[in-house]
Length: 500
Image (cartoon, rainbow, N blue to C red; front, top):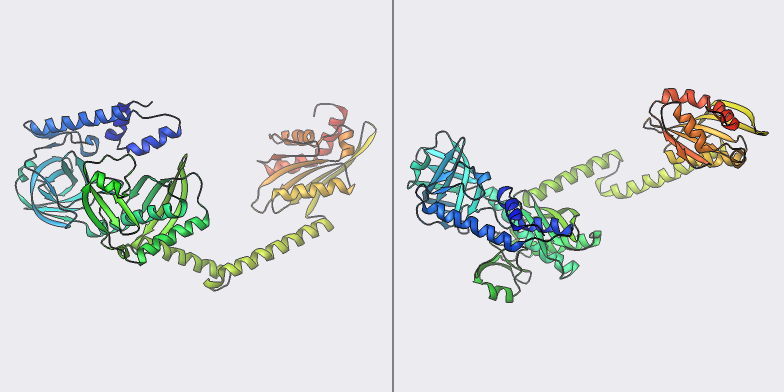
């Protein structure tokens, strides 16, 4: 069992989500001490409340390593999140602190969504009297939302508390994120429809440029399954379903079939996001008003991330458009290279592959009829234990190393010699040493593995294999030719039982 204190340290200090921690440890056969984690989390929240109650306000806000251990906020008054209704607000500063090149602000009415439930935080800008700040990170700390960012010029520090400001969310960032979040709900529903009701969310990332969805499923998805899921999501988008939100008692929402996020804790009243007849989930995130706002949807990958957990990555909106445009460009480039119209690329590639198969068969036939591209480097005949053994040293150009094995099979059946050492070269310039021996050579005590080992040793390499065929990698092809020429001496010495 992983202690709750360690789970909390991963969550609080390093920002590692509890659900991902659970996936990792369960894959390795461990359990989490969730009771200990909840106690540590409750203790930290209590410390935060006590810190806010003391003069000087909140020190080391939650996720302190992310905000900065030197951060000090004096927070005055309540806070209201207005980001579901508006992306801009005229409001007042209720807390502020400053570090080197960084500031943290708390607002009374604030429209910025804090990172939660897999959705990344908003970005935007705050403008006050004589100062502005780019909001780069939004962190939830208990009942406060910390707006962290980079001020332009001199930031007045906590003297801005009580002053009026304009807070504006980056519209493009929010809208792109909303597209991906609503698409994630459609994707979840589509997966359950295609794969079965066992599919449950096991984690997610909802960002403006992409979405990632982890789910419980035991096997890789097939191409038809992925196609069916993508089609189901597209249908949900084309029909322009309304995306409805409501606040309900948790028991009522669950009884109605609302799905909860894996590992998430909920209060007695919950926010429900509904796409009629498609999806019903407990969710505090931001979403489009109608599914048609999502635009194009493209699945880019499906993979495994843990035992029994699969991952789909996808794009929507402008990200999907860019992906499709790049795909079209690649198809166009391929079409030019095979001299075909883009619509005929698949047929043309099939024709070229068929032609290649025919040509390879023709080359194999020519090699069987002739020398097979072999250059004789050395020939010799010696007697081993009263048995004549003929040796050939050969340089052979092949399309792939497997062609050398075919050449060896033909060599051993040809009766032209009993032992051959072959320096093979592929089109990319790589060399592999092969040795072949016939049954009569093996009966005389000359094995291919022994020949390859001794010849390879002359160029500082090791070889091995079977009595009939052996091979070794080659680092120095220049010295290899010399070693192949000297292979007859290796055969003679092996026959004598003498060291080479």
